[in-house]
Image (cartoon, rainbow, N blue to C red):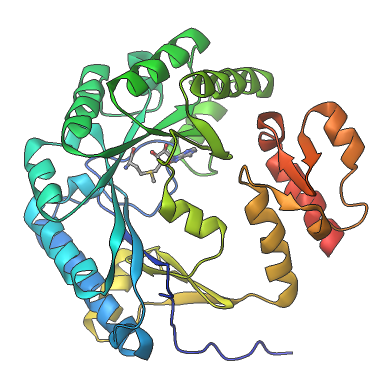
Length: 388
Ligand SMILES: C[S@@+](CC[C@H](N)C(=O)[O-])C[C@H]1O[C@@H](n2cnc3c(N)ncnc32)[C@H](O)[C@@H]1O
C-alpha cells in the first residue's frame, strides 16, 4: 500500500526546535561522516547562508501556524561542520535571517558548535551580539598524541584556551570528548576534571565510530592506527562515567552528562519526539508522522533553493509500528528509561539483564545503567525484533 501523502510541513509546535547545518570546516577530520566541506570560497559560504534563510521562507510559506506566529521556537542549534569557521558577518546574517524571523519563546535556548582553533574573540563578539547563550566546543581530547591520531588540527593549548574563552563569555558551555585511539585512562579522567574545573557544565562523551570509506578506517585497515578493543573502550567509558558523576555531572543520556539544570533542552526534544525544523544541506526535521532529510550534496541543495524550490529530500512516513519502536528506543537512551508496559513480551530477559548490571527495574520502569548504555545497539535490535 502506498504511504499517505506528506502533509505540508508544520514542524514547529509549541516547544518546537530548529537545527541549522553549517557544512564548512577549515580542514576535514579523518573520522567524520557528517555533511561537510573544506571549500574556502567566501562566495559559496555566502550563498549557503542565503540558501538557509531562503529555505526557511520556503518551508514557512507552507506552514500557516508558523507564519501567523502561533507557534514558538524554544530551542535552536547551529551545528556542523564547523559554525565557528563561518565569518562573523555571515553568522550574524544566518541568525538574523532564521531565528530572527521566527516567533521565539522568552527562554529560547540557542546553542552553537565551535572548534577550538576557529573560536576567536571576533567569533565570540558576533555570537554574543546575536544572542547565543550556549556554546558546544568540539574538544575531543587534551592529549596531543590523541589529537594527532584523530587527525585534528588543534593542539591542547589551543583547546584549553578555547575552553577558558568560552567559559568567560558564555553562561553555558558544553564540550565533546571522544574515546578512540591512544586514549589513556588517567589522562582522560584528568582532562574531564580540568574541563569541569574551568567551567564546562555539560560533556558529550562519544565512542569513536569507524565509518566505511573514511580516511581513519583506511588507516586502521592498513595498520597505521589501532582502535581500542571493546574491553578497553568499556573500561575507559565506565571510568569516565564514574569520574563525571564524582564531579556532579549526571548521565542523562547514552553520551550526555550535565551539571544540575545544564542539560541540553534541544537534545531532550529529539529524544521526546518534539517537532523540529532542519535547515541546510544534510539537515533533518520531524513533524507529526514525518521525518525529512535534506540532500547532503551542497551543489544540489544550492541549485534547488536558488531556483525557488525546496531541496531534494527524503521524506519518511512513520508507520504506527515505526512510531511504536521510536516511543521505546528513544526514551531508552535517556536516564528516565521506559515504562515496562511498552517493552514487548519476551523481547528482553529482564531478570537476567538486572543480574548482569545492564538495567534496573523499579517504579514500573526499565532504566539502562552505564554498562547497558554501552550495549544499546543490541538492546534496540532485540526490542525491534520483539515489536516486529
Ligand atoms: C559533527 S561534529 C561537529 C563538531 C566540530 N566541527 C568538531 O569537529 O569538533 C559533532 C561531534 O560529533 C562527534 N563525532 C564526529 N564524528 C564522530 C565519529 N566518527 N564517532 C564518534 N563521534 C563523532 C565529535 O565528538 C564532534 O564533536
